[in-house]
Length: 552
Image 1 (cartoon, rainbow, N blue to C red):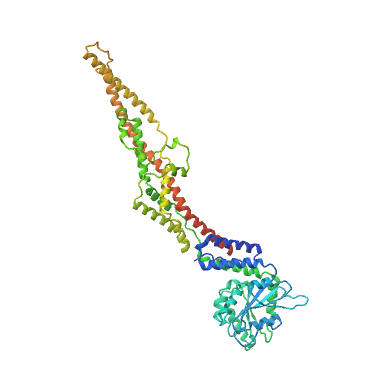
Image 2: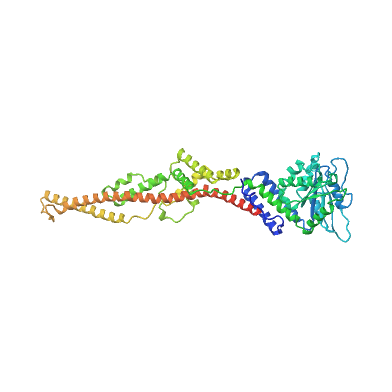
């Protein structure tokens, strides 16, 4: 159930200030703007009508108070209207319906033409007063019967009731329990207790003691309808009973000059309550777990495992090229460069910062294999889970909007993921042990060359029977032999150590790059899925806050 109707409004006996009505009007307008198509169409249309009415009524400056006499056929409201006016202005007769168009009586000299034009009331009567009247400022409207057999009459009554400031429900001993009055009007307009009067007319027809009984029963029905603040005035145009009391109520309404603000405030509250079912009292939001699941799925779809594996292999190959046995390094040229095959081999540290547009224009798309159907399905499933969890507890229209926001276009998403990978640095600083091992390998290689050449020279001299070339023996081994064998063994051992260190370094480099890629993919997830979902949820929260402001 929506939380909005449960919010208790303040005492209706205190009319809102003009500034507060303006503030609530603006809040309702903001709620309609932020809610948009996510609000139920019927209540939203009603709220827009209320905004239009508030704007139009507020523009009609002046101190006029519009009171409508509304009642069923035969309730005697036209006779009551004439009794208040003091002249036979409204038509009274046996033919039903008697009143087919609204008639207005105006007290006071303040112009009322613009107001009556807004009400679309053509029949107008200026009540003559000498020296002023306590009813100066009153516009009393006799409405068509709201239960008329003529649909046009009923619609006219409803139209004017939407615009007036004060309701006077006129009933009689025969129809005071009529369902039309209670179900279609009083119960629906129970929020308007501050601007509502109930008149039990024609009490002269009741036997002794009947007036108290009918009045008590009518009071019970009004309380059942939810009309908290009400008073039943018993009247009779035949005996003039209650006419002065009704006039006194109208005088107080005119004197306080706050009926307009009471009515507009009630209109705004009713419109906001009508929108109560269009919002929820909480927002679920996107959980960290759901976001991480989406990032995981996007990483697989973007080929991050492939890229990370290529980074690790590229690191090992480069490490072996820089620290491996020099006489076997040439074999590296026959091995394809993993990052180059994926078109990800740019040197980030050698180029200035470039924009995403430059990246698209110069590098284009990478050669990462397209995602498998299972990877695409995993992305769709993760996005749906975000939409479902974030929209949990929201009304259907909001939940659907959240779900739609969580489903990005597949083509654009794939392009964004590829560009995120392209824009991510896949390299880092060179390890310090690379140049040290490289220098040692050069020394060991030189030792092998020197030893080999020395031995060759000794052999050649012996073959040519030249003088013996001296050597520096170390124990039973000659120096050239030690240089040759020692250089070979040391170089091979160092190369083996370098391979072991390269595997460790490749795993670390892969972990660093995996983190960078995950961060880049996370930004895509936020931009394409999470932020649109948060935007819808934020609009829902703003809508709810504005509606609560109207109801406070």
